[in-house]
Amino acid sequence: MDFRIYNTLTRQKEIFKPLKEGEAGIYTCGPTVYLYAHIGNMRTYIAEDGLVRAMKFLGFKVKRVMNITDVGHLTSDADTGEDKVEASARREGKSAWDVVKFYTEAFFKDFNALNCLAPDVLCPATDYIREMVDLGLALEKKGYTYVIPGDGVYFDTAKLPDYGKLAGKSHMEGLREGARIEANAQKRGLTDFAVWKFSTPEEKRQMEWDSPWGKGFPGWHMECSAMAMKHLGETMDIHCGGEDHVAIHHTNEIAQSEAATGKPFAHYWMHVRFLVLGDSGKMSKSAGGFLTASVLPEKGYDPLAYRYYCLQTHYRKQLEFTWEAVEASARGLDGLRSLAGRVMAEVPGAAPAVDRNAKYFMDFSGALADDVNMPEALAVLWETLKDSSIPAPQRLAFALATEEVLGLKLFAEKAAEELPAELAALIKEREAARKAKDFKRSDELRKALSDKGVLIEDTPKGTTWKLARG
Image (cartoon, rainbow, N blue to C red; front, side, top):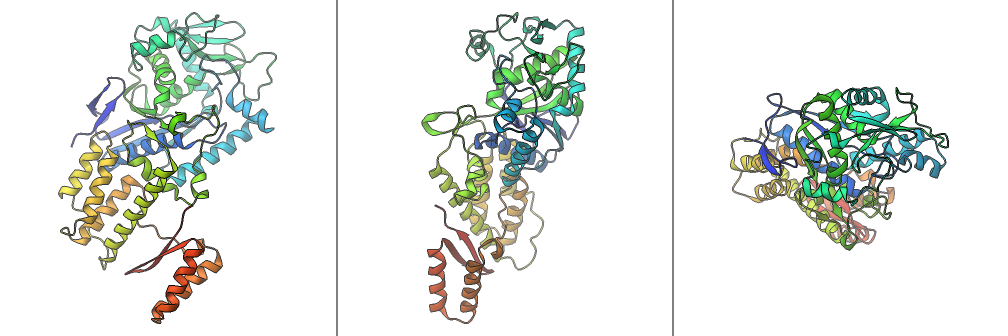
């Protein structure tokens, strides 16, 4: 079946036509590693992970490239202010390199906890300075850049007739009126952006390099263009990111890449809507008070409950975060796992191969092929597992197959040693009481465990447990 994706560039769903038959080259913007990634950021990575998993499920060979921004991302969209990594290093009393290492590791701890697949290529920006300088030289040779003494090398957006086509005319007019970019009187145009920034005498930068224009560091937008083209070619299939990247970051990536090569930078652009915090609006690190994925287990939630929460809403719809909604999602995931476990208990041996011609399999695949419609795919899984008219082995085979896409670990088992020793001992004592048919003692132990926040469920394959949340 055809895979359809909503293309931000054309503002419509399109049938995906890859550059190479059966393959997909995907670039996803990664984290800026000066602070923890918040759960709004992680919604984007879950959606991108869903895209990769869905395309693999549908038969594509996928190559995913993701960057790590460890230099050049300044505190202002106007290419002014301090480098976020350098600022974090000063604030924390560490070297910039130690800051990068710490927050990169923290990011991937959360990324892995949410069961996101590792990218095929991971690109720290500081490993690609030569490629960014070469891109800058190509732009200079074609007459797209100019120098502001003491500041940097800038791209002249007025020289590109279709500049801003990704965001659209009305949005770009708003930017030119100063909606998001502060005025810099030295720039020729308000939307011009840095290709290379000069180190200034008063700065004591830890991250700087020699270049044909002088010592300094690359403009933020340069890294993604240089790294994407190195690993995916001058034109790629799909470029992904959060909706906040449309008007500036991705718009500028397109400008510099297409000015340098004369070719389309990406054929399809996928953007994920914001996660918002009720009345407070978009979750933002600059505003403070953001939540990280690590807070989920601290509150007794499996991080995959948050993944399930995200999968229930299409990536092109805004998602509002509340703890009540997370609690509902946790109960939903528990219910889905229990249902899958009961189906597995009905199957004495290994599951057969999944029936790819069955209606439920085709419905699930059709949902994925329709712009990665995860809510619909989830609904198909629920309906199929509950449908007793479908033999249990087939339902089990289907559930196992969907794990390749949903990544919810439906059949994961908790080990008793995850509990404190005294609670694990109570579970074992209760299992022994049940085998001895001492149901009075079994019930007493169930209550004792419940009082300590451990909920017990007896299944045909044995006793399982989960922690009460609160």
